[in-house]
Length: 478
Image (tube, rainbow, N blue to C red; front, side):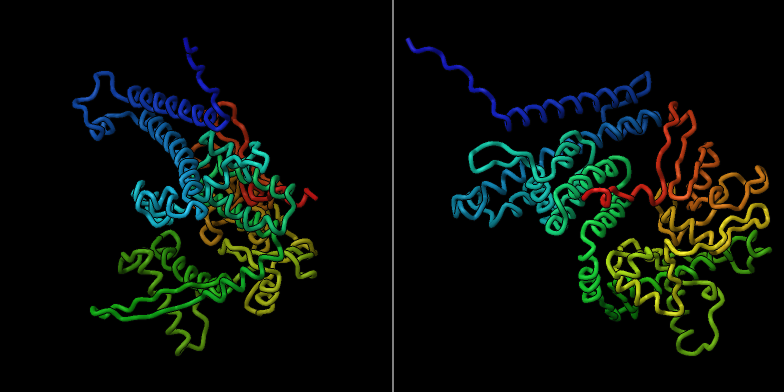
């Protein structure tokens, strides 16, 4: 009599897949529990999801949102793995018997796009992330860790999303040719930690900064590539509207952006009677987009016929921030206030040579920046120093063109001095929210820490803000 076969021992890959399915089941259960807990005691009037959502309490709706987001990250992580396997089985070595072609598709990207209903770009990103984070197999058949183990672990744990994983892995792959494995590993771990705490827009600032540090020689070629791609097209449609479509490299964009934003800020300031002393005769109902168009037209008219500087532009400058060593050696990168893409040292030198631009050289002789109680408003030099430390809104990372210097301890109520230790760059929203909710801010020469109130975090764990969030420990690794 034939003995019954024993079930095959699951492989490492199968075990991982089973673990992912268990985690997904757990997330769905958590979502179901959060959904039920968010409903009022008397239950839903009918069974439609829309009615359920309308009846949920605010805290319950937030819990449902968090549970849904985590479930989505789990599904995206699993889909990326599936996409990588589909791509592997559709490789050119399989010819016409490859998985995609056998299913009637030209390539795996088209197959995945059709299956998910997403764009080919999204399908390509799924394959790229899945491939970058999948376990590898050596020539001897043994399993090896993925190329990006930190991203793979965070993705599997649903700690980061697919877009964040794509941004980190694609940058590290570009920089890997010019950086050591140890440096790549340190940066990967730091970026994964950042991605788990901040939104994608803020993460991208860290990714750009990390790439400039990992591959300083690559900043200048990227500058050249961006400059080559610059363009401006103009066309008039049948209604008489003229369409402008511009692609500007950082060097070209900096003065354009600074000038338009200065005129827009002036127009918005004039809407506030408290700023100009009296209400305007005619109320300004223009949208921000309309004000920007009018600002561009005003700049053109001024160039064609005016001989004097437009008043709002009189104090407008473009600030280029560069380390002294970078400026002297020509190696490394610099930054333009209001532009998040780093620029090369040679581009910074060229821009700093313009008399209309201010080079903020760090590491040289400093200006007196602490005024105590002798002045209420922060000086220009102080705002430059605060901008260097905070890099924009120290809380949310808003572009530096939309933030102001504020006293941490208020000037009138707390008799706070106008010093760097009592100053912080904040956007209007964060400024009001922090004061309203009772956050504490501790500012030092290079870091800003935000201490939440007890009703937000009972442990009151400090949260790092400012540019220090992006000071990845690249240079400490040989």
